[in-house]
Length: 111
Figure (cartoon, rainbow, N blue to C red):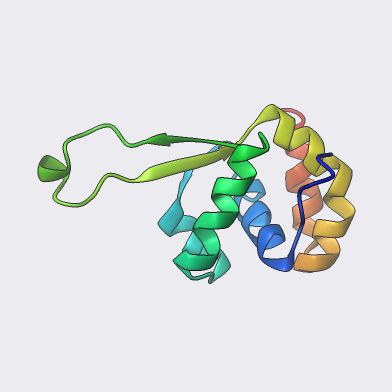
């Protein structure tokens, strides 16, 4: 695990939201909905997690005019992130308070 990565309560919420949907990419708005974090808190966390290799992101394909909204950026956990999350699954389970989170982290190993 990256020793410089601080797993604050907010960071754990973001990771829990992504782990709960291991085969999906989530947009920042979807992550915000799951975590109830404001964008000023959420996006620096996503940027930091991507910077250390735990997440990867991509921009939605399409013209914003045709979409009738700004393009979305989608995030998902990388293989490195999944490996690191398995190391901290116990801490995440305690922080979020759900047994299902441990099961979701276990599924990451198989996805």
